[in-house]
Length: 274
Length: 87
Image 1 (cartoon, chains in turn red, yellow):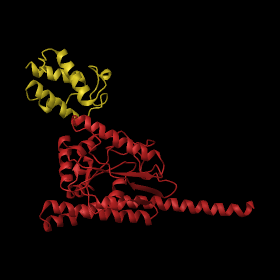
Image 2 (tube, chains in turn purple, yellow; image 1 turned 180 degrees about the horizontal axis):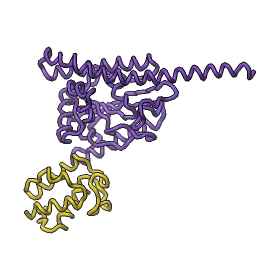
Image 3 (cartoon, each protein chain N blue to C red; image 1 turned 135 degrees about the vertical axis):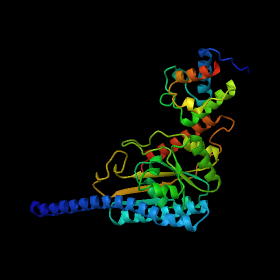
Image 4 (cartoon, rainbow over the protein chains, first blue to last red; image 1 turned 180 degrees about the vertical axis):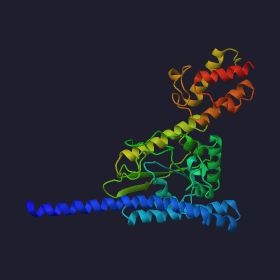
């Protein structure tokens, strides 16, 4: 028995090794594709749109559409190369949404890519470093994404304005990726302030990932033993009215709504695949 | 409600204390001169703007936002507001 099993195990180990090396290569390749793709869009299609589409709002919408479709293509590449697959539940809720604030927990680097890949267009609040990142600057500028380091009053006003115009705005309430080993990081109150100011209802998106890879502080080449699997679910809309007492001050309302958001995500994330 | 004169540092401290408790739900026992606004008292940059606006209404003077950029602790705020009131 042992004699039969041994070579088979060896073959399996070798097979596993080959797959591991391939996924390492494919992961590196994916990072390159992402960066080069973003750069190419910024140098070709987006400048062309500057010439063709004169209206700034329409041009931004078009850029957001291109970004969403590019992300969808990127997710497809991740899947066929064996790097990562996505199981997404509730896409129609995102696509039917108008003037809603889309909020998600932020376990990994790819969360925004996966969520936008499901949509036709979306406004985003993005970290300010991307506006100076040579690969990403052209893209985030063309899409007119909102910087997170500006005057906080302006951020809230800008986001609320987009929401009132019927755009959806995607934002991570944690403000950064969740620390490794934690379920949910501390929430910033910017989301609640935007929601109350607009006012706009919230669509929660729960992101789960089977591996710790692509988390904050993990280098890209530290790849997991198997294909990364995302499970993403769109929850039911959290209405902004009725959650807070409008007679109270802005700061108190924002705190109350932030607690509602925190409890929602903690509850959903602590029940594995509920 | 009469507007407090806020002549002394103690007055300013008391007013700030009341604002922190009323507006931002900061537990009274957490407030001390050394307490840091953002780390210890869980204020954020939008709260800071609210706080400045509140003090402006109270003292009837413009509080320059640049003045507040270096503010870290409760005592820093007291210092700035006290200086403005008595300017």
